[in-house]
Amino acid sequence: MKRKVFTVAFLAFLLGHKAKAQETTTDSSAYKKTKLKIEEVNFISSYYTQDGNNSAVTGGRGTEKLTDVATTLDIKVSRRDKKNRKQLYGFELGVDSYTSASSDKIDPNTVTSASYQDVRVYPSLSFSSENEEKRQIFSSGVSASTEFDYFSLGANLGYTKYSKNKNTEFNVKGMAFFDTWKIILPIELRNNPNPNYKQGDLKPRTSYNLGLTLSQVMNRNFQIAFLVDIGYQKGLLATKFNRVYFNDPGATVKSENLPDTRFKLPVGMRANYFLGDHLILRTFYRYYWDNWNINSHTINIEPTIKLTAFSSLSIPYRYYTQTAAKYFQPIFQHDLADEFFTSDFDLSAFSSNMIGLGYKMVDHNKGLFNVKQINSLEVRYGFYNRNNGLSSHIITLAMKFK
Image 1: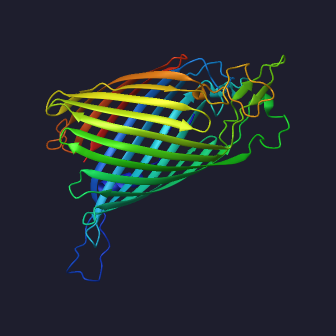
Image 2: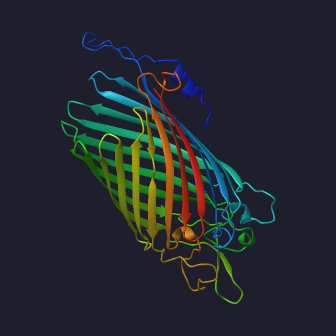
């Protein structure tokens, strides 16, 4: 499980105080000290549940029951520097608490193990500086993530250039993640001699991503964007507590084994249509290819109906289909001669549908519920279904404070 609060004393400090910028002794007549201004505070919480019968932990057959409660608190503050550039600081804290019946099958003899219930914590910091005269934005950020068998550090750099009328925008963003996995093997394989993977060993994984986006406002009713996201991974890419059962008479079991490199190339297009004053149609298409032989297509359609001046209703729908990785076979189908092998159905051929419903209220002037600081509230529900039997439900609450 790789989904995702720290003590919020720092957040309370930011909310309760407006920190003053340092005074300068040079050219004080041309520069006035500024204060940090709270731009917005976002609170997001969701409840997710799923079930299915293709658990990779037990070789591609078995319960996939899982629940997850995720909460994220994000604060953005801004100020002007000496050159009148707008600087934006972001601070985010997130936590996911989940239970996973399939993970508990790593050692079926335990009643509950560390893998059955765990917490993932992920803080991040971001910074951007906008030069309105040159029409460009530089950004950077750092992040971390940790759970019972996994620790990750990330960093990113970005650059945005936009046109004078702001109708055209180009963005490039590079990201790097440095992960450490703790090897956890199925209970019956822990005493088997293996020079590469031993119970409790720490193994690295490094991921690099380069994202390119070109956005264009075609006219007052039509906006379009083109996206490319190049990814490369190196290190431990297999989940070592996933079992694979082979097709020999003894039904040999081994720990999942996958190549230690992977190259990904998704390309996509987003288009938004404003069909009158009361209907917006948001669409998205993405094609994905990687060198494990997975090819996929994603189609998103989300009509949004404006009910009143302050409320709207959205009906998101997503269709997804992919081919199988060349290393995937169902349970008891792999040959002992195979170098790489997995029975993880996330790497199988499948198609899926997601349908949802969302309701949003916005009031930037008076605020919601007679509270001026609450600018928006959104509640969303989604139902997801795969053609191999996996299904899930998610409910999300999002609030914005300004």
